[in-house]
Image (tube, rainbow, N blue to C red; front, top):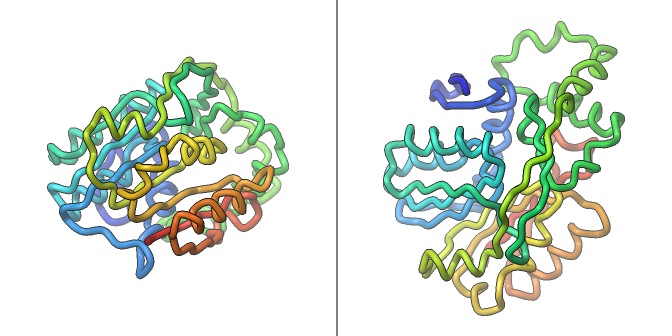
Length: 263
């Protein structure tokens, strides 16, 4: 575990400093005129990684209610450190993941690139796709990465090979979101954020019909394989949500999309 300074001057605990800065850049694109956050809101962060969303929201709204879920122990330990760093007693972290049922599964942890970790490691089996994602990230990196212009594209294959090196198989516990809503006695969810590397449809399927009435906004990163983007879009529209779909500039060469939904 180490500390890094983000482009806004805030410090954060992390595993990989450059990845943390990219995640911060990614999360900055979440909010605008479509998704709004108030100081008394309740946020559910599924696939919280190291907790950048919770930490940044806590710095803007020091008593906001945040429940962050991260199933991989090494990443969770950093999430917990950032939870404590926030000084927000309403920022809670949990060492399990969210799916459509209670289960234990093997997840693949990438120590050199924790954000790639997933139960679906085949997502990153293609070196070509990894290079596309890396290229997009470099082209849209934080503005203080002045050195990026000195990295020639022919070296990208070396960097992506290092990202997925020394991967580990980790057994993780998962629960359906409706079970968590019951356990935490949640009466409202002002924002449900889902970023779980290919399992977002399972999270959605794990929400009971009666629980949808308390969910007001969603941000979902969707890996559009097997028609999942359209599946989730149609499901949310039927539930009365207005939808906005974008593909970030850094992700234009990938199958990753951000879906925003609100009632």
